[in-house]
Figure 1 (cartoon, rainbow, N blue to C red):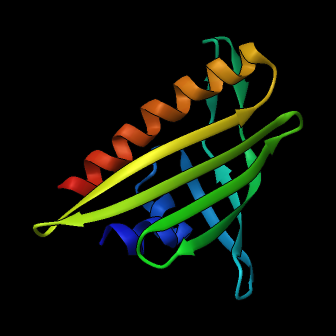
Figure 2 (figure 1 turned 60 degrees about the vertical axis):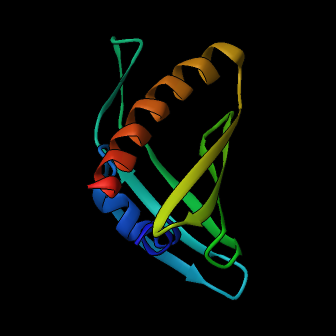
Length: 126
């Protein structure tokens, strides 16, 4: 279930607490490109944003390594590597996140992302 949900951004978006609409834009042998709309996010508790961005999903190694890349907004680029391992009927996911942005913006963005992904992984574990 993990691999299917993490590799299909529409399914990932369905359990993500911020994503409200995920639309497939392009599919080719290397990646799938999606348009993502999120609900309002409050930056620093005072700046409202309604993120809309594209995300490419690469299945680097089938069933073992998935990569998301996204220019989330001007000046903020995101790369997420998800490495999956399977032991005794249990799937373990290691997530590595790289945010290229101003250090203050990157820290705020990582805080929001960490909270959202904890919710996603809790839902996947149910």
